Length: 257
Image (cartoon, rainbow, N blue to C red; front, side, top):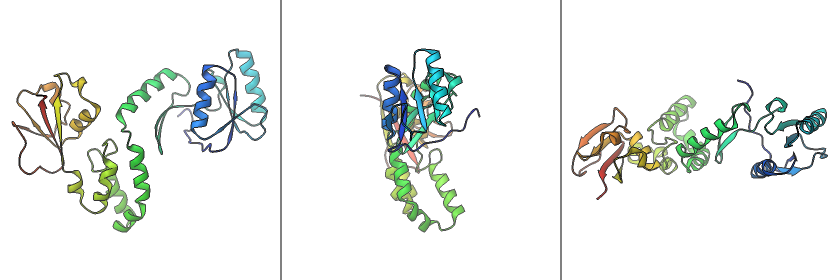
């Protein structure tokens, strides 16, 4: 690693911000979203500073002055002057995903953030909050710490009842705690195809295909669509789904009428 990733609690704390313009405004918004107070460079309580300056010599002078006072500095677009860097952030509070390139390529970090924004459901923060509130209930059901960790690991695993990439994972938590895993995870998702292009699938549809245990589909569903499902998913060609659902997540795929 070229640095140690940390999360700093800024609630109510001062952060020095120097400079004006687009870069300074963006950093101001970031500081305030994290609960920090933006202050000038003369503030004596601040321990963090972000420096934006058009002139290299000016930036170097400000950084030197602040460092001499024991303040850690981020100099925007000047990695060599930085004591810390600011990552690209995917915010699913209280879950934060930070992507850092150590200041080598902000564009790459932004591109990765955009991909993760699509992948991580908006409800991820709700799942984290629900898991925190359920700590007592989990201890009661699994008094042994090792058993508790294994149960939680299985539930949070890929295609598990609490899989973090499932949009409804938080809703499944009560059933899981009650021991009704099957009832919480057995469900049918219906996908009505708008085209033969898998890129036209919605994010929810693509996630469902990728997680499906059983795939029901019409004979004319394109192979490119079916390829988005897991290789080990049970595939059944049928005109409609009837009867009792098999265990796990089932997906019914047909062309839109």
